[in-house]
Image 1 (cartoon, one colour):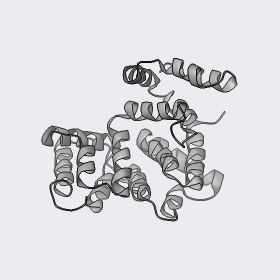
Image 2 (cartoon, rainbow, N blue to C red):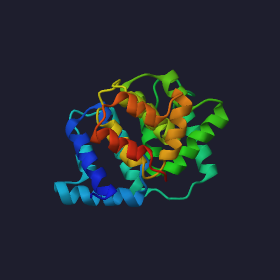
Image 3 (spheres, rainbow, N blue to C red):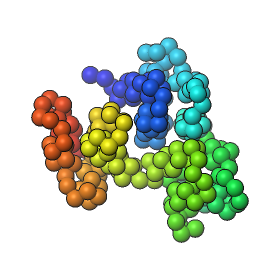
Image 4 (spheres, rainbow, N blue to C red):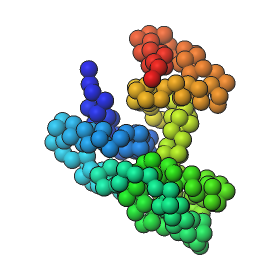
Length: 240
């Protein structure tokens, strides 16, 4: 039986080898959804198993990809950030995001975004985006859409959604994967396994609220009977 950090190291490796949008999202889920102590264990397991550094493999992604810059920033944040969440700093960060985004002409300033992502913890970033909505009356993701729709902005939007509302983010991925609406075929297992350890109850609640059907029922209706379906149902029935 693999430890969670060993499993995440394997997921990270597979994502880097396959090198596409859906698999880069798997890396985002790791860096956003895991604590810094867990990320450190993932990196140790990755180095032990593959004899190479996870951070360096992300830096070496070829051809360069919009997710790459964000992943490097998130990885760095787990090593460098202060764990404390500060309301004043979060408001200042929100204003900086506005002033270098929708509050100025042209595209979003990638440098400012990446600097904030590098220096702040995930809880602090979540507070920053909450402050942004409170100050400017709409989600930061809306400002990303309004300012520009380039590859970096598209990647940034998905990362912000994962940070701000993890259950809703994972529910959308689960539904699309169960229904065969995405190329990310490994998403069902990946999300069900990782989130069963932390927030499956909340995911089930949001799934029912969003789609009007239980997650377990959707699995039964869409996946043929057998060991795999039984495995997914066991995870869905797991309470945290």
